Length: 459
Ligand code: SF4
Image 1 (cartoon, helix red, strand yellow):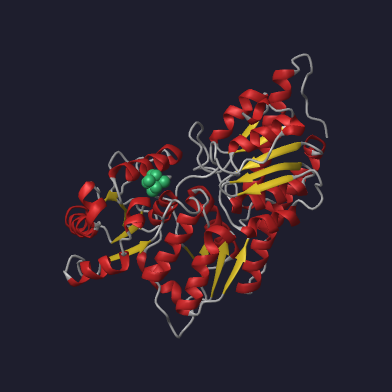
Image 2 (cartoon, helix red, strand yellow):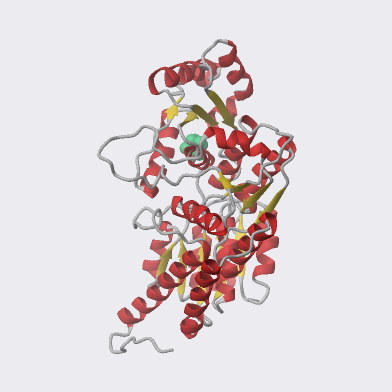
């Protein structure tokens, strides 16, 4: 085992992934589909896959997640899943009456080679899709990419199926928000409203996966982007794709299909990335930044200034999704923390290139992404050079326990805490919350490990 070697003897592991820092593509596709109002996600594969995808989302979002499955058995595995999917489309429209069905594939249906374009065409020919209803689809083979790739593929599927080209352009902007929490999508809409900029955010899981308790089960909660708004997005002025990994491909597809130009930005996490987001909204819409937003930024700057001595020089290990890690690492560098280890299970050269720039002033930083960039590797790095803080999903809690290091839970999945669906991390207000959590984690740890020291904040 690698851990028995002394630090200098550790060899690069190539053939094995241990505790991956990612999950499977269809989970991302299902999450994106839930961001359309009246949509029923459908998993084209075995029941086990669908149960896993639904339970992964339910455990993170603490809400019931509805989805159909093609329920493959041995027969479908040998002869293909067309008959199962046609029966499923018929049943879903007849019994559950969604506005649209969003089908994604699984490892099994991709290995068989099922052609969703052809099967959905046959469903149309056979009259299984009622007038005014739609079926969209995305290929999401989980042996490549990650849940982020699945989200991106479903956004492309939404663009392939819904927006319509329009000669007249409206003043509205499209925002593809990337894989963020429902609370973040709500915050992105609030910031745009505060700026006076009309936007269509899609997909939008606010009001779907952070729903109010009414005492009645709603098969289709009132949130999610209305299909009509996505159809009209082809006539909007511009698209902002937040996050190169989750959103850029969808924005590109919309440009090719409907001629809507796009700009890719980082997720607006932290001060610099939020500045760029607000600035871009202002430039594209021609609207000035209102005082209320400048005040929000000012409060964030005040907190950073007051507490800077507690952040300075602290070594941080980060893991999770590439779009979040880029923005988060940049923010940590901005407040003089040192993100020394960064790991993402999502592959893609663009991540390494971007992180190299973000971490240029941290010469000791190590960054890796792809299948072999796993939690085991992260733990090895930490054993060879301690950190002051861990930031990532729930799966880091075992490292936190082993190394007696505080953990701030961010990203997906968070299975053992609440709050992430209600309180945003994007925008200036989100950055204040992030700083509060970082500061509290560091100070709680100090309280616990040095009980004789009275922690009292000084400015
Ligand atoms: S078989 Fe593939 S699609 Fe199904 S749960 Fe496993 S990784 Fe995901």
